[in-house]
Length: 336
Image (cartoon, rainbow, N blue to C red; front, side):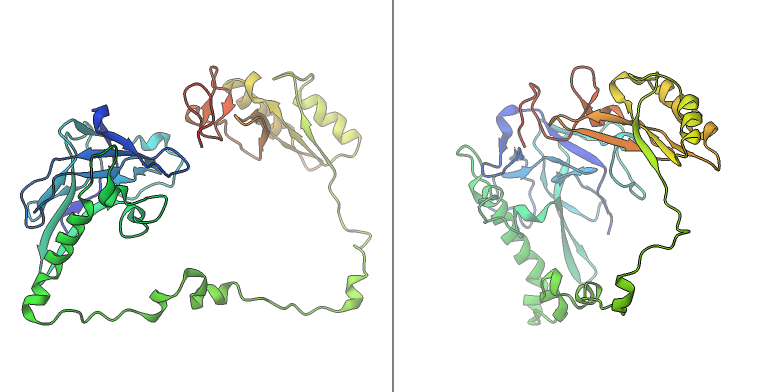
């Protein structure tokens, strides 16, 4: 349709145009724009508030790019700009054909309309919860639709009404509105969909009661192992080779090394993985791993055949040695 949703996030540089979703349980910033352009749907639209919290590889409201067939309606404010999302640091699934402008865009477009064949299209890149989904419910409290923030209202509901009337106008003029037939399953809740009911239907398995009293055969192989070993690479003693040789003498089948993340360098971890591979054989299997403290005080273990060290953007604390689990502010106070 001649439009792209770029992998960019909107930044509002004017603090006077920043608000927040008052009833949200975590921080959801809102941004204001009065950058409304002349269009068939712009009547009585003075400004709107829109959510700008980052989400996954995007944002709760994102910029749009359109070709000459589109009519621009609303842009972010004149003090706003976009920044490309660094997908190299993303923990979310890869995007197909991801596009972004290297230097971003000042006052990016966020709402547009166009005619297409016999119909019309409107486009906004925004989470629907804030408007047509749950916009009037307690959490959203019509802030994006009408109430706005700090005495400055939002005309987004007016914009939606204007747009819906514009979209429907050709059908009304022809005297043939409607015609679309809604599929019955569209009106069902997700858990009532036939495919879902079939997938989770209770299953019955045939078995004999006599089999319930049996025990594993004598020749069933049971594997014994030890988890939590620390070598001299972090806070322990000895080497991978030492532990492997001792374990084989004791008839142990596997060892899981859990080194201290805050005492382990990248090169030492590479060495740990190399040694585990080197000294594993048909008698014993060695697994490299580490433990790390998270910012709510618990310790988490990571191990496997080829585990990776956590990247910096998953870490917090002055030394970047703590796993970031719970949302905090710059002073370490919990906010989420």
